[in-house]
Image 1 (tube, helix red, strand yellow):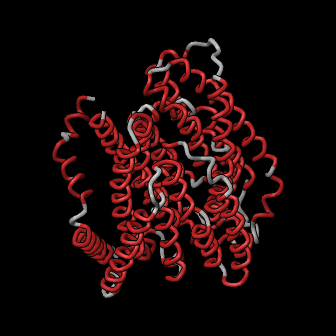
Image 2 (tube, helix red, strand yellow; image 1 turned 60 degrees about the vertical axis):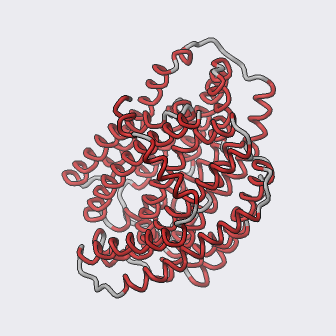
Image 3 (cartoon, helix red, strand yellow; image 1 turned 90 degrees about the vertical axis):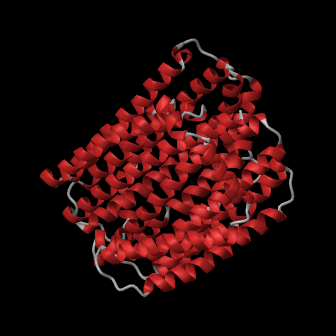
Length: 512
């Protein structure tokens, strides 16, 4: 069972990173063309509308995570009726959510000017906004069956479908931008691609699990429904917290400082999303296997695996944060131009928020696998309240950096301590001291390495492309050397080396 989970995780991860690498390259190419052809206002309005859509997505209530958790045990036990009941319920809920986002989003159309300090002169801006709404709604109408494939440790299948559809989408968007210089056409291609991709997920799920096509209605058991409702109530609070903390920055920046600052900030957000995307793929690939581990093994085995995951979390996110710090300004100069640069103090806060959020990944992966949703349901409400109050107050005093400090302060007040606390108390039933000991070690190692990397990289004079490559090589060498020297005796290093030696990953992939 352990070997099967490890193999599934690695297979999912390889395909996830292939997919993410492809997405990053193509998305960056499209973004550069987008910025060069369309005005800065279009960049700002895209970031603003994306945040509005994310706020509307709070209607999802977090039920997707609750149902995915509910699928782990039935899939492990081969209980088809329970899977069918959950998927039928999932379908009804997601159709309702998609409809709500569509109609609520369209209802906001007359009030778009309220979100912007000065409305830009962009033709057909309401049509552009409605296309954003349609793309979001289409995801909910068609995507729910993909959750079953993912929960069954076969997420790599979804990645294959996604890459094929996205390749055609990106090529089409490039042609539309170059030949037509038309943003509405660009967004229309995206909506069509979303529908096609999620329809592909649905068709693949029907082929893999033929019993899903059985139209006979299967009701959830009373215990299933009660647990689902309990988890959904808690996850709704988590959803609100996540949306307010991470998806209102552009709204506040736009309202109080204007779309120009949104345009600048969204380019750095794009880098952050790229790095997050790569890392999230790792933890998404692990999640089904961790869910299976928690459902079938004891707590001692689970916590041993947790320390390995946390080790990897710290090394990868620490490395990404420091590369982001040292390379971001050169990257923005090369791809988008000096006009899109932000100050270094703002960059430092972006990096800090990226690191603090990233270091939560290992805890969240296991917390979700244990189904620990209810025990700290109130913390996201506290976090979101602190974030809004501090951000709105500080943005009027010190500008964009105040919005980002709101995120930092709210993260420290809320999830930084509460998430590991509930995991160790209700999941592992293990003292929390060892977690903070490990966290502190990784945090100060990252700070020390960052000071060295930042100092050395600042000595390199900016020469387009050349200095970026030299800084990149320096960062990789410094970060990995420092982490290896300090952590070389950690058992997790030995474990990962043994895994890589003992598994012929490529042969397994080819057999698939």
